Image (cartoon, rainbow, N blue to C red; front, side):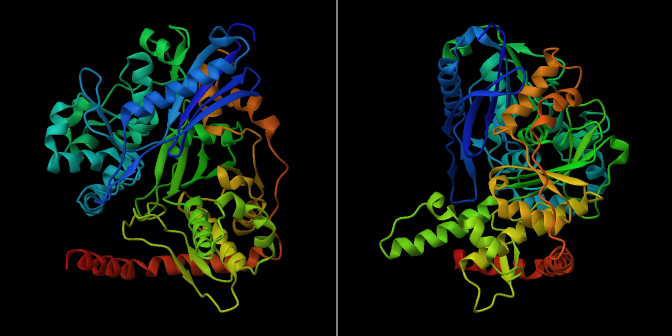
Length: 523
């Protein structure tokens, strides 16, 4: 390929680290990946080796460059995005202080719950547009200050996964506008807010927060050391993308000049985003949950509610089935069990039970925040088979999506679906019927990497703005819509009201169960 005709997007997710090459028209050329590695601790912590994260990322880049006909010379720019939230600390010499705390880390759950009850919390929420939860760097830093202050004394920078990779690639300490503002800033000013930082009690840690770099407007050159590690040419422009969920939304179809669509990402977690043209049009919910995330645009934002677990609920069901088969001496993996499952689920009985998909040990964060929230079936009956129960799980994911969209102020006119569950025709059909909205997918296999590269297209001058980039890359790749089932939709309307009423009644039971379990662990 000719020089300067390839753009690479890095998407360092929770499960997989990928580097993906695209041509200027949005066609995917090649991909290289490595499984991500993290460790769950007995105290609720979930940590990741920072050095290994870069080593794995560099390995994907070197492999990808080897697949390009024009090699490193064909690469015009590299854009990076990655999993959000969490806390990645490194010192003045650029060395990790401690393993990174991931968004899955639950150690700060009690601090997050206490923060919600503090005087002035509502005012803080209205500045950031983001409800405090155990995933976030704010409460992670508070936990570290209380329990391991020596880490903060050694640290020079507190950032996130993509920011760490950007530093390793360029030597520049920075974060993007979205993660800076939804944690410590004001979504209206698109900058840090000193009173918000003070409200968290983190004024003494203010120096750890890196400058904000908007990847639409500036890049930094790949360093000599990073060139040696990756096989790319030193000086190649590197663009700091926005957080992975925003990049996935950009690549998944949220952005358009009309601004009428919503985007749901059903991966390990569930992210549900409504395009909002201006910060003046944001609707903040009474529960003080959710995120307002800046889009790579001058004024537009995404109102977002996020379920802690989406496809993790499906994986749990598949693993249960695999475990039963293994007991009988039959080995079947998740992929084996998924084959043909769509048809069986669609033939299953609707509303065999109501399922609340709060399977994560970290509880739930959208559209409410409760670290004690847990999954449950309501109304199971003796005739419910595996396919019926799996259908209930998919319905539960759809009800959770509707719950989240409702909390942002309105259901979008159309849903663009991405993430692993977007491949399921059963999921698409059930989601359309529960929301009573058409559902479309985008024929971009790696939406997160594509979204990061679309930001690079703007920065490199190929398109004037992100809306033009979306028009060129996304619109031609939209699928035909999956319509709602007109017979089922009214029944799902009624069931959703019950789903939400049950959800509001369950916190007392969750708290009591949590207390009982803690007693078992200490008794």
